[in-house]
Length: 162
Length: 251
Image (cartoon, rainbow over all chains, first blue to last red; front, side, top):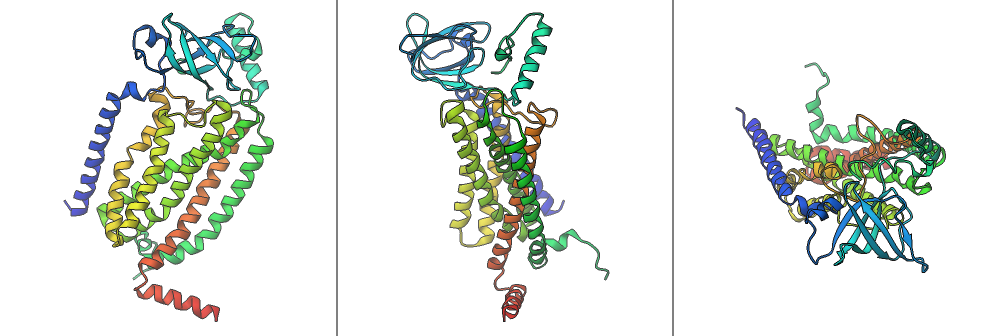
């Protein structure tokens, strides 16, 4: 075996070991790396007690309630299995919409609702012109055998990862 | 002896220097052509997005810059592995030449991402896995440049920097798969080898811009590697001949 082949094997072996270490560390840190937890996680008691954390999911259809002052807001975050009501006072991002993804930072209140200090919109990876979005929405509505308004495309079909 | 094409010939700076010099104008020209075509397609032809309106068009800078920032790092790590295993002079110079462009791409990716995140997500920055790992990539580039600059002997600098590059390469799959592995605010990837979830003109605009960034990176890396060669090999005959020839031309 030539020395340069030995060196190459050494580099390859070192890289493999570093890769395995990284994989183990990241696996151990898994729950800390996640930016948010789902309402199901909260229901299972995975939420930190008395500390701020983030929940993520979809804004439930027709759950958005706005007080007369225009900035006091309540909505329901859902992962289609569990729901959590979120209270928030502030300005919502432009992409915040019912049926779309959302990530809220805040604390659990005593009554099981979530008081958010920050609300972020999470959009999906689809990019298309509005006409195409309407066509996709119509096709899905047809398949589902019910009427869905074009503006709420994708809303009744939440994906596994939002 | 017959003078047939031999790849190893170009491992010598004396032959690579003029070869790189003849290639540079072509890469610059192709980059400009791709850039103009990509901007035309992206800014004027591609349709408005159904959720993000016109704001999404920053994607034509953001995604190519992010791709390049990851790819340049992989190329540098490849050069580092070759340099450490085969002890070649050129590999260290190539890694050196690529580093500033890689750092620029990582910075551009973070900057355009922040500008894009504020109106769409509602935040300039969140510590999600995608954003954080890309920031680490920028630090790796800066760390590599700082480390190699701090060691006077260029051969030792290349070795130390090469080790850093190889250790850091573990970050690249983390960046790429972060949106799959963990809950992130950053959305999943729109384009991969199997499918794309973008309208066709948008996708082509993005791919043309990616080619533009690619050609640009090669062109500036070749320019930079020529400078590094002259600096490192300044005591050799071929550099003296090269510089004398230049001076002779000017007279």
